Length: 169
Image (cartoon, one colour):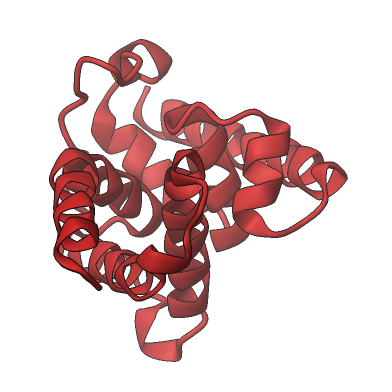
């Protein structure tokens, strides 16, 4: 890569690193794994930086790499346990998570019980704000698959949250 490409990549990295890390955390539930997933996505991007002609599609490429790495990682037997931590603080561009569920811990506990692909769809649709088409591109699947995974994921999330209310309330 020439110096101009390196500079452009460095600027993109600086601008997007926190957002990518937050998304990674929502996908896996562990800050250390989120750092690893974000690093994986940025390394893959750096390798292809010179070949990316449409810089507007860069976010989509990083998102797709991040989601695929998260799903691949969740298939490994030693990664089946989710660690419980607090959710990241929402930034100015993140909708108020507190308005959606009683506490962040409730959301995290519920998300960890949702299967990885459904969790990925929920994170992309509702935390990243992607529409069905964008989520389908990020996941490399059909729009119908995104719709069905969203419905199943929301149903699973709802069941877990209702169970929590019954147990605690």
